[in-house]
Image (cartoon, rainbow, N blue to C red):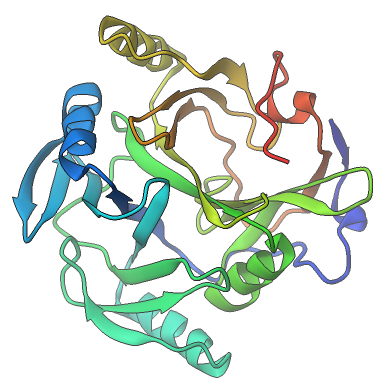
Length: 292
């Protein structure tokens, strides 16, 4: 249930603003105790094509990118965002340096030219680089990798970092009965969120989301999973924040994968919406998977 707009946002949290950052989620690098098995799942279930390079699987399908290397389950080695041009990368670099955030000049295996690498307060490694001008992102493409959600035991600090320094803007907050922040949905373009932070007892990946064009595509993906005996773990349903239709599955490592459509579009600054932490907020159609 939405309880109010901007006036309910605690003073210490970012409020009405347009994003300083213009970017989109370009790739995610997962780690796995069994990279070969996990890569096989993504090839069969999600249609990726890939190859192995120096012990890491590099998967691609259209504009989707996914890397898998050895390591713990439910863990992200790094997340890649693409900005539109060199000036946007320069502006981001200046904000980080001004805030005293350590950055490393880097190269991305999927983006041309220079990139920068840094970490958020939870230690999640982020790589930002300039988008490939030869690769136009189809915003209505088939299962485009659209957002990532981190679980955190320090949500307010993460929100301030991503909004005040990196340049995201808050779209929606979710708060519990004690008015503590349980979720924050952050945007770096017109889409309601490209990154979110959910309260949890420990820091980890919460889920990845693939955006599809229509509700019919949600049906078709569900049929694809059914043919492979992959259970739907949650949904179909409709989220309150973002107002998007969704379903969830798990990959073999237990990572949550969301397939979503009709995500709210936000043009320019608007008051932050605040929601009650309850099942109806997470799924207006029925049961919800409450993380905390």
